[in-house]
Amino acid sequence: MEALPLAVTAGWASGVNAYACVLILGLLGRFAGADDVPHSLTTTPVLIAAGVLFAFEFVADKIPYVDSAWDAISTVIRPTIGAILAALLSGQASTLHQAIIATTGGLVALLSHSVKASLRLAINTSPEPVTNIAASSGEDVAVAGVMSLAAFHPVAALIIAGILLILGLIAVYFAFRFIRRGYRRFKAWREKRSTPATGSSAA
Image 1 (cartoon, rainbow, N blue to C red):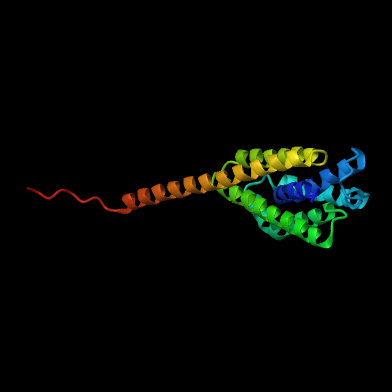
Image 2: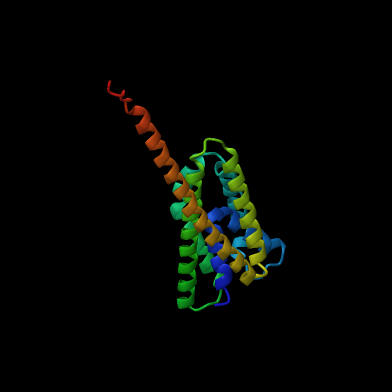
């Protein structure tokens, strides 16, 4: 199970930005001597395709509501890529171990994707675009940093990815709790305004 830490970390990164994950792994395997990266990810066609798709997502992910639409489209894509990467990273493991690692990578990718998509829905309740840009840029930096570390120190990267995933789950909980509370206050305010004021009865 030596490949499991790297595969799980790749699953987390795939759920956030699958194309960046593939591109970074491919570049590290081709130019930085990361031996654990499968050769198939380092080929020129894969690097070009991942680079083009990453460039598209880089822009779309920073536009309010477009990012949520892209997340909806990616609901199947990101977990699938996470599972494929996990299977490739399992290397010479037995068939059973490959299946376990691939399934784990896919499930982690689905979970991290759900966290990302949920946070973006919460962020989109704010009309300004600055928060979207900041959130997307932070995700890009996190994926690049964690995957660069994972290629050479997979256990350390796994710990960081796990912490980020837990923090994301906590953020989702508090974000939607805040939104629900704000909606209730807004609803109460509207009901109060729509209710005609009753004058006091004459003595």
